[in-house]
Image 1 (cartoon, helix red, strand yellow):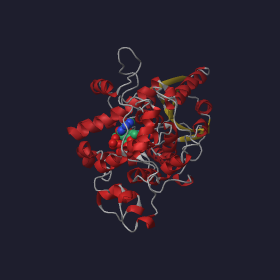
Image 2 (tube, rainbow, N blue to C red):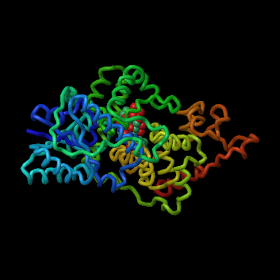
Image 3 (cartoon, rainbow, N blue to C red):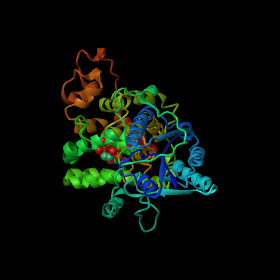
Image 4 (tube, protein in one colour):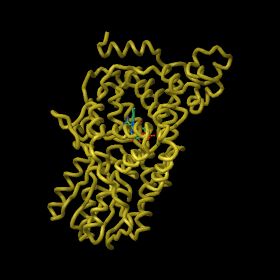
Length: 456
Ligand code: FAD
């Protein structure tokens, strides 16, 4: 018998249940990745993610070759390509990890009916892309949790499956055509400081994180200049690291750092179970509250200043420039820049979410859209009307200003926390500095927000 393993957001050999099941039950396996034209048409092929993806595919192919196999890469409609590959290999079955987005759910339905029409089976594996499958825990009267705390309580007590070992040998049948594996160097317009992708890189980072980083996570995860988070998010997004394995290994490390870290992994599962139940929440308000955002035309200059990191609020600008330079931003930066756009500037969260998806290497439909909704107050936050003040945030999370000086060179000459309010400085260099005055007065922004939401 022959199995096809369709790779999607699970680009690894370690702890890969579909691959393990295929190898255990078949004589030969076709590891297949389809560059799906629908993903490109939907605008989900931002250069940073395409470059990282190329690294992942290159590394996966190398890992398969070490084991006697290879990766088969095709382009086109994913269902049509799977059906063709199944015919070429005379495959009995196709195995794929369950996905949560509307797109992934539809892909699964289409695959099932196309394969069944030809007498082949589709097996969908849970808990590959998330640690717990969406729906594994549910509240009494709903198909998903809408509040994190009760979800987390149940999530923590739910046993996880055991990780499965990476295969030693993978036999791929002849006669299944493949394109060349894409290379990072083929992708134009990539952020200069973009991280490397691939399972090898993920495992190195994991080992270093468990040894040197996780212990201090509870104390340091919000420290903007300290940059003391795991940076495993792109690896989780592309599945070069298994969330199940990660939870097991982090729990094994023990201590308050590990506990705080595992809680963040529960946030990831939380957003995935919301999106699985409410796939429309990638674009529609999860909890519609109002529809009086400023129009994009009216706010065009503000939006541009925000995107370019020239709002005049140094910590906002620093974070937006980090995003452009690295294709990644610290979580505290994401929170305060998103709040600044959606609340202080009162621009529709979808505008900001789109910009993040254009640049983020970990840009993920569940995590990005639902975090944006959380910040904008249309999502699962139980305090939807709180507004983060960028100056207070800066003083708390970048107390000496080192993060701002790193990313905003125009301000590099200002020592200490004064860098957070350059408009207050009376120094002679101010005019020569080429750094904008604030584009909005914070109290006016707050007043506009409160009016729009009928809070006064
Ligand atoms: P760590 O602090 O080391 O956390 C470990 C892992 O936990 C992360 O890799 C991530 O998988 C998960 N995690 C942590 N916080 C969250 C969270 N709030 N929601 C979901 N998962 C979380 N994360 C993405 O992976 N993709 C996105 O597109 C994305 N967009 C975001 C947009 C906004 C507006 C906000 C506020 C947050 C967003 N996040 C997103 C969540 C979070 O900012 C990143 O996961 C985190 O900064 C990644 O860095 P890290 O791996 O060093 O995180």
